[in-house]
Length: 258
Image 1 (cartoon, rainbow, N blue to C red):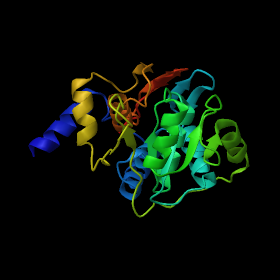
Image 2 (image 1 turned 135 degrees about the vertical axis):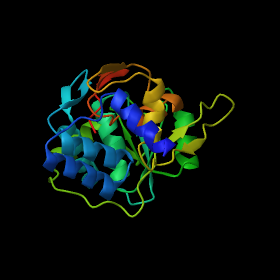
Image 3 (image 1 turned 90 degrees about the vertical axis):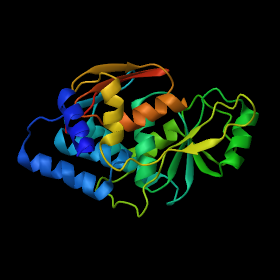
């Protein structure tokens, strides 16, 4: 009971427990039931509740809603040449596109590997082999991707533009985000982040970091840093907030309501 009281109390203090249209609330919890509390499920619950609410303000794309994030992440999932269990490198700066790529990969049951944008070409090549990456989704500026493995941002945009819309089926095992150590004493090692099994991980973060529903948060530190990626992957779908992505790229993020 103490755990339930903590979750309810924390969510109430942060403005997450507010009434909403019954049909949307039902869709919201239905999304969590089918997809779980990973990135794919959390985005779906937010899009089910507030599809037109701004989730991210991207430096280049401007405001992006939860519904738009979900639609594009589903299209990315449809065009990625990967299978459940594969590892996919994500070599992208902070942006709405990076978030969409992360969620698109996990929707397939594949594991996104967050790659430090400052890696040298030799390190990137060794990391690709060490992590057994199936492909690397990268921003156009990064040209040192091993031959045959890269899927550049511009090419991904072309594929997404031609991709059909439509609901996806949850994978048997959801993909889990893999963050890399700093690599200061050698090649970075991967650490697989566990998939949350409820609201407790989120509440543990927002109990200490005073985020509130509707708050506007600027994210300037690279999301590829382990500590930042942990906070963002656990709290990105906090209902009602927005993040700003700068080109670093900054991201303003808006948590959704519960």
